[in-house]
Length: 344
Image 1 (spheres, rainbow, N blue to C red):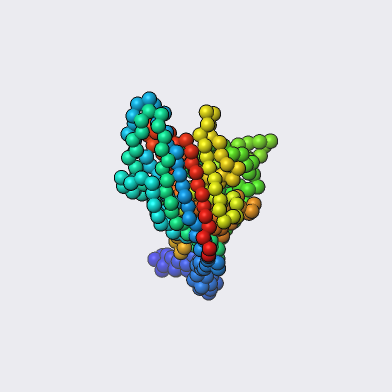
Image 2 (tube, one colour):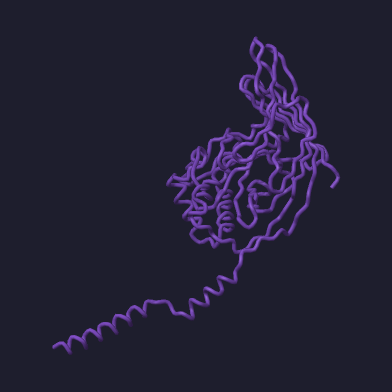
């Protein structure tokens, strides 16, 4: 009886081992796949790089709207030193108190300004700004694991990463994409195919997505486009942020643009280029610019010399592309920018 039990046990063991081996992957087949995967290394290469230098004069007309003398701190934003942009402050019309940087690296000069009731003053700064036009070639960029991006892909006021409509859209977009770059290209194409471009005050991703005739539409301007992109990218685990700045709509040696406060709001020059666009973080390259509104195509790492960066929004909150000069009590009645292109 014991001999029979031993035989049955051996037979059952052999059958069990055979069944387990039947479900294990074939060593040769999967070893070959692993070797092929190892040979596909990430590649990031600049195929074009060229510097364009501008001398920028930015001027702001400050006014004391009250009848009493006001002493106020005035914050002037400067173009930032960042990847693909290099900035040098040449002169300023008033002695600043100090300079500071925002949480996301925006450069700010702080002034102490005193004005009598109804008085005005111009605050001026001259800078040298070098913008790098570049084009990147990227291949086989790996997906990062969640622990690497968790802290940098959450939601905030304008990025509705927990909105189930956005989650569903992101999942459908990312389902068949091979890498983060392809996923971002698919996000951009999805946005452009549904974009109803309407200049507006910033509303954020949650309010930018509307249903019209049974179809989802992205309604808004450059800020809504950037917010929708960042929302979808972050849901897919891609570190992304919004860049704010100026876009030179005219390819001229001298470009002047302005904003003027009126009784009903703001008036702008015909060539006003306040702009926002997304960026994605590629560990092999750093922050890479994404432009969806230049030429009607998705441009990832294909960045023109017409962009001048003033700030970023990854952790901090800017709210509007008009954040160039602000004070607590004084009003900024006029924003004036002149770009003079240097010979390259």
